[in-house]
Image 1: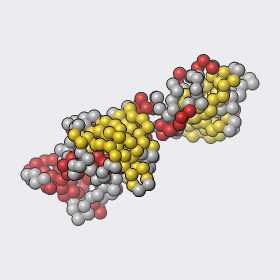
Image 2: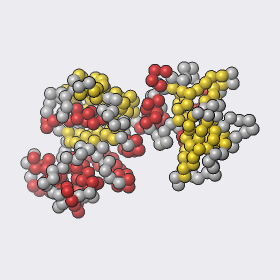
Image 3: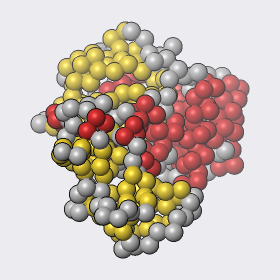
Image 4: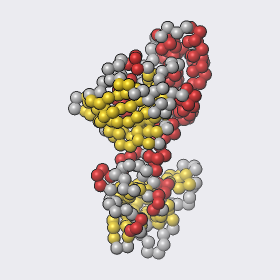
Length: 351
């Protein structure tokens, strides 16, 4: 078992606050992902779990036991670093086997485990090569294999597949999810790729400048972001955020291109969020304030349409390849039930 918990953990580097009062629990056998922009504290959290860093405040627990003073070796967690940290003088096989050799495991067991993990990650044909003769993607798979070959309580992975090409990255993240389920181990994963985070995680934590802004299942966070910051991180294209203005006829946004009944908008709303896939483009009615099409990006199964509504830039995501031309005038429609309403205090969710 490996339940990992932070209780009000803070880590500083001089005047830089890398982790700010972080509290969370990663459950046993959970695929948990930390997601956020660079310098948001993701890698520092992994280093704190591993024991390479000591918190300035707060407590770290593994299976309910405080480990602040426990050495990295005694914590029984395996990590794949972003820079891979392979031994250049060893072959790929020797790199993968190294954790088992250090534990003086019988050679027959070492060979068996190396063969098993090599098959799962499709690296059997390169085990005889040193890291210098491997591609970036091959080196990353060797580093992942070195972590998987052990039997730790938990696996920590710091953006482990960033160097792979798009197709191999997609295949590898599916494999990682499958392997994690088969092993029945806790896996904590760090990435700055939102698609990667949402596709692999059972739950995820959104980070901003060392603070945890929201924790939950990817779909829950996508459907109910706790703030404008969280809403803008998830989704491609990003959520449209527009200021709402309450008038006699209801609520207007985007220079009148979006109109809502006053009853549809909760009190305290300052800004309105609409996902590009929920913004519908239609033929304008006579006298209707609309938007101007700026750019049309056909991407096969869907099309991204960029629009100007007064001084507001919006993006709509449409199925297929609709017949919409740049500089044409269009009307905008949206279902109030699919909108997000944000109020004061850092753009927190109202409803």
